[in-house]
Image 1: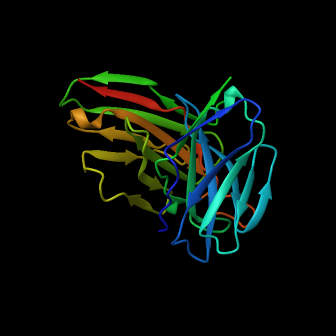
Image 2: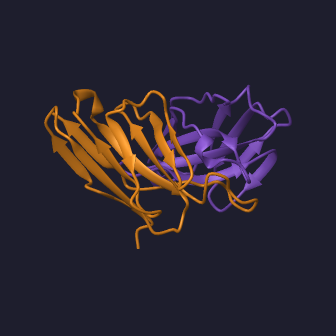
Length: 113
Length: 118
């Protein structure tokens, strides 16, 4: 199973765009890249998933280069409420086994006023 | 309505005791999970379970056992509690061990149970 590496923490200010990069050098051909968000005292929740190029939804964008060895989660114009831990996961996506997903240590994003 | 619920939210107990944490999901999912999150926020899967397969993380002591009375419930039983068991335990569920082509294999998490062993 592919291992992921992401920064332990990041700081930002309200209104800024935040980019969190995750490295996954051993990603397999069938693996997808998924990001979860965890607020304090809550369970993680799904944000976005992609396989290659760019994916965008109402919450974030996910950029994946052609070699797929890394990915970048982009949060536009963050607010204080975006302070959370963001987890990058690599594993089965659509049609794959959900129970093979592995959470890493995550990135603690602290948004300042 | 809460999709994945856990009880209790907080659990404080003495070393050596046996305790259970309950989990229920009303999403109609086939697969449920238990995770342990330690003080460093590392989230580690303990079990994944559906009606066909129980997958146990080999690092989980056999003092921990999942019990599923039906598809909507997966309870966690812990025997002979130790200090190192103190953590937040999360239950989660998903559409299945093998998701459909239209699913993001998304896991839905409960609010967590903070276990403190004294």
